Image (cartoon, rainbow, N blue to C red; front, side, top):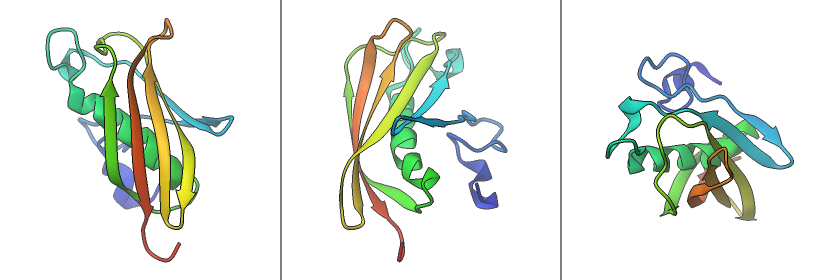
Length: 131
């Protein structure tokens, strides 16, 4: 990670209010875990929808970054299936579903320990520059 990305809200280790997510790749899927606290809620006991969207955006766009590509989200769709509770470990996963030129299509989901999918996402991510 270059120095300018150290302050990323989702993954930057220097951001004092950031999520400090770390990632692994397994079987062509990018994965992180996160346990949201009360400071991440919207309604009582439920993770704020904007943060749910942030987690999905990060897992999808950052997967390309991890592959050495400089990429930005061009379009993000989120389908909220169930309320995402605070205090439980969330598994956030993303994978590439297609590519056309400099545009990648990705999908992602947030899963609870019992297997319940609370949210799903789709993203179109654009590769910046001459990569």
